[in-house]
Image (cartoon, rainbow, N blue to C red):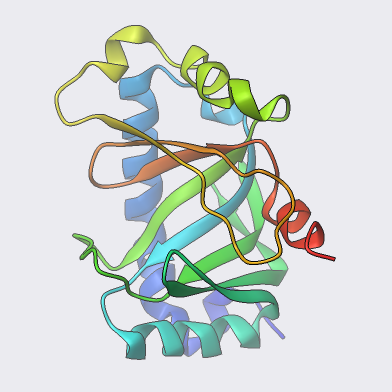
Length: 186
């Protein structure tokens, strides 16, 4: 096994990482959000074609292991743990989320969001996440905030989500890591 830079199937993702990091930093700056202080659990990709998802899956299997694959919100989502963590800005991220294409068509195929763990009461997640950001950033044109509660079959931990996006990249907040959610199934 090797890092993603050595997996030919993932070359488009390797090439897309600088764009993603630049866009992520721009969004954080607009939100007055200090990224370096956050616990980033994982990074996620988006694609438009099943063949792209299958190619990325094969590449991710070459540099890590699949630890969960299930249907969530009507589409398969695979979770991988990398043998060598991926350096993304100030973080070394070892978990990658790969959803298969759904009904929504994303503007860009590649890296799409990071997910931050904000430990604490699930019911106050949204307020705690919003408190990390400047008020002016959230009211800027093009910034949207969405809440949801995705859940896979058998998951016992509540998984509320607050997502903030500028349409290019997204920062999501959860009270639990993906591994903790998957482990709650047993």
